[in-house]
Structure formats: structure tokens, C-alpha cells
Length: 82
Image (cartoon, rainbow, N blue to C red; front, side, top):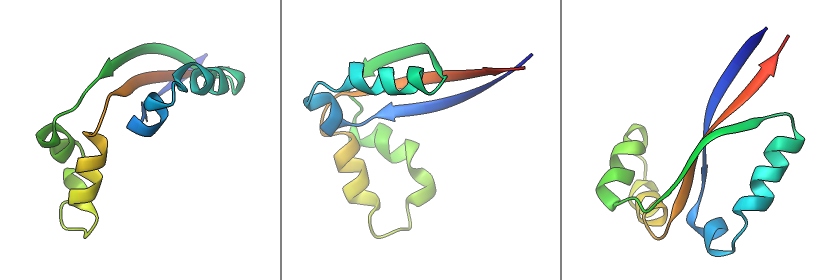
């Protein structure tokens, strides 16, 4: 038996619309299991560090502003397979 983990973020627009439960249900329906999740509000500096790989791109500042514009839900998902 093996397992694969991945990281996912429910972005500010979805948390504003209270879609976290529906999004989690979609993951679970697809065979993924949410093993950890936390609702946080990232600062622009934290978002900048997270998206540092894109720092030279023209959309970088807008992306960081968006991610820090409201609460997000960060989560770890697991897929178990045989």
C-alpha cells in the first residue's frame, strides 16, 4: 500500500463565498482524504515568500495581493493506493 500527499489552498474568493465544505467534499468524492487543514490569513510578505518562484513574472505583485486579501484554507490531502 502506498500513499501520496499533496498540498492545496482554498483561495480567498472561495472562503469568502463559504465554499470550503463543498470543495472538501469534491476532494473526498475523488478519493482524497483531508488529513490536515488550517484557516489562516497570510500577510503579503508570506504570500511573496510562498510564490517566490514567480517573483520575476509580471503578475507576481497582483498574485501576492490576491492571496493576502482574505483568509485561505491550507490543507494536506492524501491519496492511498494499493
